[in-house]
Image 1: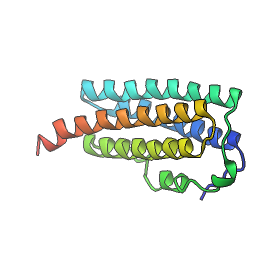
Image 2: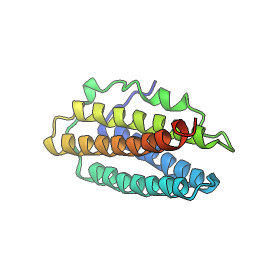
Image 3: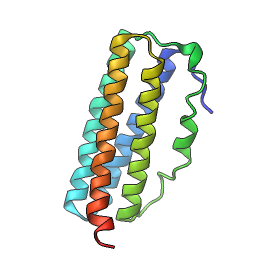
Length: 151
């Protein structure tokens, strides 16, 4: 379990998580044979780069966060439960892992928004959560169209 002592630690955790996902999606794109899937993963990596910059900006301006209540988001551990390092993922496995990543990040940003007393911070975290939800939806559509349809 990850315990955060201040706002900077929370933002650093989120930034590090986005950086890991940028690498994950970039590498995953290179292993996919289907051109549309390759492009989907590259697009998500670019969106995550923009999100990382948003988080960097939040760190600079600072946001009021009730750190006393953010002892444990109960989410950091769940990132480690998914094997992101497996090589030669099948198309289906790649989509499932990606959907799980987006779900976890959605929950993280939603919980951060709940614990933020600053209006701008709350709006920013909700915006980040919504971006994660949209990415998960893209992946679910891909899964529905090409995995479920093929079966």
